[in-house]
Image (cartoon, rainbow, N blue to C red):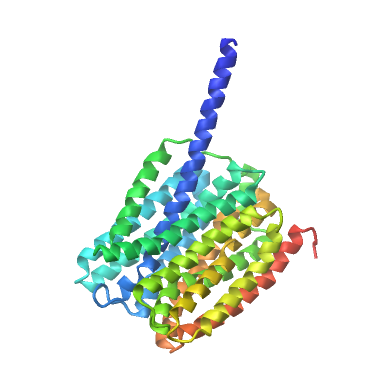
Length: 412
């Protein structure tokens, strides 16, 4: 074997190792981003407890408004950032913003005796989290799409399953740290993970070609009509997911009489079935194509929301079951929407991911902020809110049919 062949093999081995390291970092970032995202709703009992922050339902919901606004703005601006800075730097900026959010959350615990200051720090924390989410998640989805161009649907599903794993672990960690008398242990843990990710990722080559320059120039000012169908779907999805993810613990506690531990369990189960569903549907795609999954799941989540709304008081374990069904219904919808959109709108694949995450966050903001005034101001019960959200899920089912028809070759 000559020296040239040995050098070629060595170069190939190094390239393979570099690629594997990049993939590992991106998928690990999905888990950590999931943990960061659900740190706030997982600690809802802390924020609303008189022993800690003592927030009302309206104040608790309002806490997420900066997150939604910045999470919408960040991915919309992200396409421009990618052109100027590159995908890697945008991804690293997102991780850094998440780190700032965890720092502000921990710091707010030291000024709880000054409620305006503490609440201001919480608003700053959620704003930073929204920025981090809006920059990081589109980048992660674009990386997954680029790393596995032949199996993009499964790659994006697995990435989002790992993100879902983080969201499922967050409530369990909060319960653990509360029992230890240090609820702030989760944001500290997430901050340590983010520091490790930043150090790891900074040394990797994570630059990818996301779009042709001509396509980028063309799509700065306009998006195709088909994009807005996907956008409408993920906006509605954001409402459905957030109604479950942000309000199920309060509904379990106040509406069904659950203990704080059982309410946290319901949230854990919701995110666990979101994660498990993504893995399941990626595994069975040969027997159940993604387009069939996409059509069925909105009906599953609609049924779950109706069941949740009709649960009798004093039966909190039924609430845990309903949360698991809702999680299964939500599971594959967001990653499949991003994957379908990038597959169909290939000329603007990177912009699709960012734009859809922005629209998802608009739905997030509607549910995270809007439910509080409806419940506390208008006197609408949380059960009625869950029931009304079932109508939103049915609207998703109608849009899912429109999306799938084009993908299956029916232009009508």
